[in-house]
Length: 573
Image 1 (tube, rainbow, N blue to C red):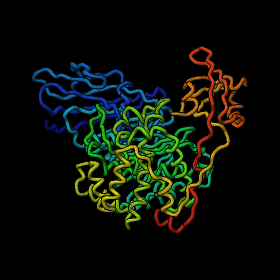
Image 2: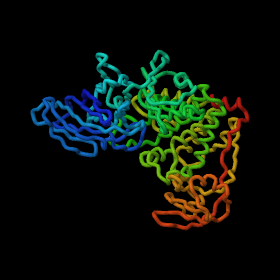
Image 3: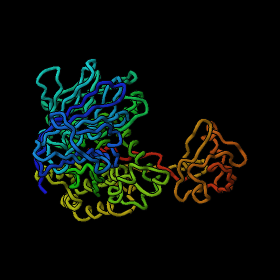
Image 4: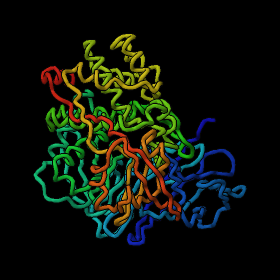
């Protein structure tokens, strides 16, 4: 059914920010058929593939005509309302409701006395079977707040009014808003403004954040050949223990621990996060799987191509930081060492292909549990490694990842309204590297075949150096509560798995010795492989005795050694 076009005006009002609520008002005249209109609250956000059910924070829904008379309505599902007009009455409407906003993440809204971060899928209702044309959004907020940062087009008629416009509903939802007294800065690149908005605190450090972000922007944009937006906004929240990012049409939201910017490894992680989310302005927001637009915000959007959307981006982010000259080759290889070790430590790679991992993101990646590592693999992690190897294969054919990116971007410009299918991606690879390279890469995606990591490193002038830890191997991960030690997960086929130690067990005694948090890390060093030990654990309020024979610790990647520096750099440039 063809959608009708409508103009809708939204207003977001924050009157008492300490109460964490936003009042939403939407006005318009229904242009669809009949005397009924269905409005809905999105259930998920593009870029974050989990049904988050944003309607759970909604309260006080009501619908009126422009005379102020109440309209009849009924709730028809978890986040949708059917509104009816009497016969003969103009189909004008004013809908109002409140949304509770007090969850700190890049995919939720947060309001307190200090600032507001508005993630619009959590706030704005759409209209079923209607295409919104140039929707407008007005902001009302406390007068002590002085700054608004957003990728939305500013159409404010005067300084004290904050009025914005988007091209359509999809773009409107795709522009987060930061309001408060946050710090702002920026730079111009190719006569395009790039705004930096920072809320929160960081410890004093010597890192030139603005300059380094500008360097990353330059590297990514020059690699892709052109800039696909008229302005760009980096919104960053700095607070203890937070991490994450979410891409948007012409902006990104970043979360990072401000204290970690002091240490070198923490700062490198920050730079990689910036590069990752910024590159999404090309890959995902433009180059995208066919299922990613137009969006159905009420149902899951299944795709098998998240290995392209996130895997390629995960490979390119650290490579962009290297190519920007912000890290040395040794630091880049240390990042890859950690990626390789993480991959090898996940038994789930034997059961879940990248295509399956992508399709099941809605029920697996964003819902981790004690068995996740035993049953699935991340399309971020394995996808990034698959492209690491693809770059090597293409380089050996006289091409490289840049040529692949150029093909993706050309395809986007030829048909920007139509997303990609996997077969198109495989065909691009075949054109660049031949049928053999295509076949190898396709096997990385659709099968659980082991990735040839070690041999790939050797082909680019690097060596895989292993070590075997001396400690005996339990095959568990633990967490502590005060001085108590609990099993958080059990590794598939490890000693704990074989002898019945469970996630959730509290470890009390090992070999007759009491174990507490302060002793646990050193305790394993005194245990012997191939030796049986009696364990006493607390499980669901009962004491349970187990006998476990420990293994030798498996060999681990210790270092990626540079054998031929010049050759390695040729593969990475």
